[in-house]
Picture (cartoon, rainbow over the protein chains, first blue to last red):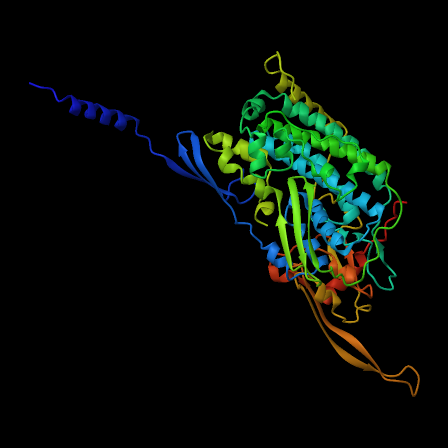
Length: 396
Length: 164
């Protein structure tokens, strides 16, 4: 009797493959999921506990701001761009206004520039505090939420005291900042300079912000669970980050000292001393740590600016009906989320001919398929949260 | 960056709990200084004078020039008016034509609180007030007519003092 070895081999192989046959599952995360900061949908192929081929599906928040801008006037667009990244609404206005001013060739008064700078840094602090609140929450720690939000409220109160709006300040005007309500004979004209006591309150609030960063560091930085969840998770090498166009704190956490506040001159940052904080490994922990340090740097910038704020006009001379001369320009700024830029094409009318919005979060989440390849399912949340994106900023 | 090297296991968590405990004691014993929230609606917060809560209308000042309605990004202001002839102030004088306001509605369900209408008004007929308690059960009731907008005028705050 001869033994058909081939058949036996086939049989045993078939047995093995039957036993180990696993089926990949397609997992939809979102679009309505509490950990996704809005309506981001991820389609992941999950093999056991590991996710492969993760594809973000975006567009649920699309509001068509680029197209809408073509049929709105410049003052109206300032109100619209507030809503792009709603966590730091004030910072969104700056590059757009600066782009229009660049085409008009306006010189903005120094006091207006200082006010812009102070409020932009406040927006950065409040945006980073939201991250400080939500990121530990996504990892299961609820306490830092209350510490960070309490402090953010203090910063937003100051912002509201000046601009009248907490989330949507709409405070910048072409040529400066909002000078006054009512342009007529003005019996009850509301002049919009800084309210009395703002500078001393800001100084005090920044001291408290510095205190709360220490508290947050004590709460989170020593916590063994958070360290285990974030250290060496979602490592983003600098060359990959640069190749995907990742910017802002995410890029700096990978060790690239690139900060548009140093590289560009849209606001007088060169007058102040601050460090560009960089991380070492580019993991989730570094991204948390870089943002914590940036709160401290921003508080330092604000304290210097409050001490050195000059007196003077709030607005340059501008015509009542604003028409931007024909031309095109690109202005980019360091927003809390990263590089935000506006490519403004004007045909000489009251509104732009075309407005291309380069928002930071859109480029930042383009890294998701790369960074989530082979990640554990629980780590998806840790990695996504650490990138700190806002869906309004992604979809516009 | 957190220091590497030997750490007593659990020390980081104890440090965090110490922060939580001290903050809790602070808010219990010194609520005026450390409590960040108020017990709404029993206690009400006072918004800053510049807060953009609701828009008030001064009907007397309005000249139906439509600038606010045209500059509104949402087109949520509805204005209608008619011309009215007024008798001359002295005998033999010219008959004056004055625009009278028939309808001035702001749809707060559409409004995005940008404040452009208040800014462009050349006759100081529109004002911001920090009032915020006007939520409605039905969306249609968010449309405030000119009488309701006139009522808000009493709540317009005084101009706050300015920083030097």
